[in-house]
Length: 228
Image (cartoon, rainbow, N blue to C red; front, side, top):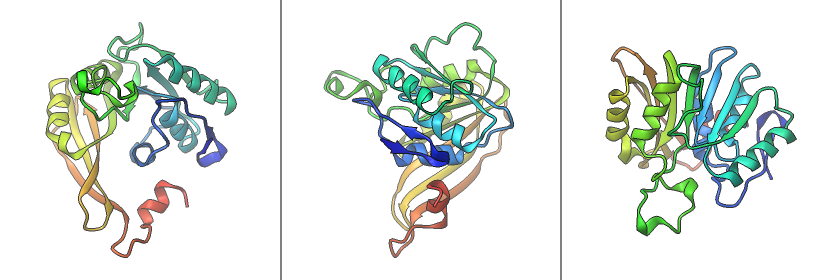
């Protein structure tokens, strides 16, 4: 059992993403309008949706998840935290948006798989492989689901940055905010966080953060992310 801010709890299923730095920093990075309708692409057990519900008491989060076991775990997490009115999980392929989803959402979020698909990766759990969630598929679905002016937030590995910005542009999603995240001050970049806007004008703002300072002490940013 994992514990989230706001007294929420998270139960994971086998093969699901653990409660990781990725999800925590992404939830912190996301900026929501009041009463935002949010779509979580590849939502797993509901980790990111729970974190956003804890962060903003007015949002509604819909998760799309292809793994039935993760979907069932998400339903149980929603029930356990009494979030039935604010959160839902749908077991489906994110590449095929349900009817009525086009242009519906104010915001899309995703903590997608990082490992490439292919024969050598078949022993890797589906939640960690991008053969069913390649960047092009992800951005296409986000672009279709978002209202004009809506934002797509995601976290990924730094080596994918050029591909992500290019894929976003191909689907009308303009990169607006980029955060470079280092585990330790002066260390290598370990994660990137991107905000892209449907129909947005060119103009990218760059930020940089680290979780621990040069002495190995938690930074103020770390304390904000983990609500310490």
